[in-house]
Length: 250
Picture 1 (cartoon, one colour):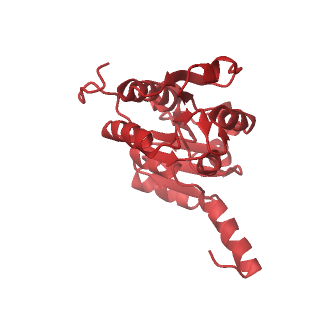
Picture 2: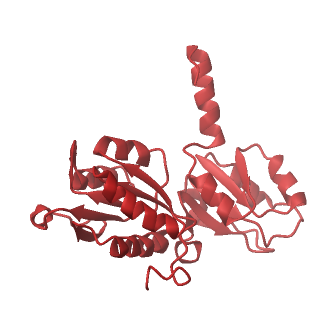
């Protein structure tokens, strides 16, 4: 793919990418290239800032510099893998020898780039890796949400529903004829976040009567936007309650 050919570039409007580098110019060059392809881009200049962002934002791919003011990029990757963050990470290093002695097996490093950076190649690689992890057609995920399409007339709930704390169900092909008990039970299970996508007006009223914190999205674009928010309605309610009990404002 010629990354400079906008018509042939992979569409990144659903994807969120993190750049961790202590050189602002490097971040700016790569960010500009990714944003032209439609990606949402966040930046961090040190390990601590990157970890804080990752724990509050759903990322689809990242580029980490190796040498940083408060550590190195591989240490950040190791921490993330221990905390079950699985998005692909590319590494950037001023000297190839920096990474030769490091054990990167099992860390999900998708590429290693040298400095000065080949911005077009980095952007193309992150595009491919992020799209491969987040596009609905390939992996059934939109950001942090596990994404399922409700088949018309099929009330069966996939077992995989129970394996995901962030669940999105697309009802755009579902008729306005109510919900079977199996689906109601599946949606009301305690989770960190539940989203309903594409529900028609009558069906949407059925969801609004459920005793569950459900958010609504008209389409995949809106679901991707929900995924980038750091909390669900339930988590925000708990936070408000804790703050009110402690007498602290937000």
